[in-house]
Length: 154
Image (spheres, rainbow, N blue to C red):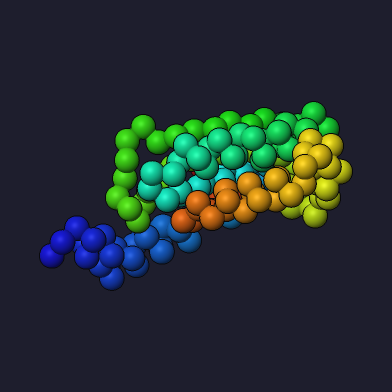
């Protein structure tokens, strides 16, 4: 039996489901959600051999918009990470960008970035073309909201 079959055995799945049931549903209740920062990790998996192009387009066209949102107070913190080692193709990701939003409401609201785009990119046709290319380079993109866990109280 290979490791994948061992990891996905029915017994192990039952144990895992039982453990998940004992986890607190809201481990860090917020006294006031409007004052509680909300973190999201954005994972990007890029076509092999095209990461440099993807990153250049990200830094040119998307990151400046995020900086403006941070200047407006909508974003509290931003961080970019790359994996140190590579993983299997199924588990691989090339770039993780973490944004700590002011709160969950701001993170999820349908905010119109059009005025920012017009200010930063007067040549809208080039911006649109480059953004289209950036998304063409993606194999997969995933947004993962994360919450802190205090192991002392868990």
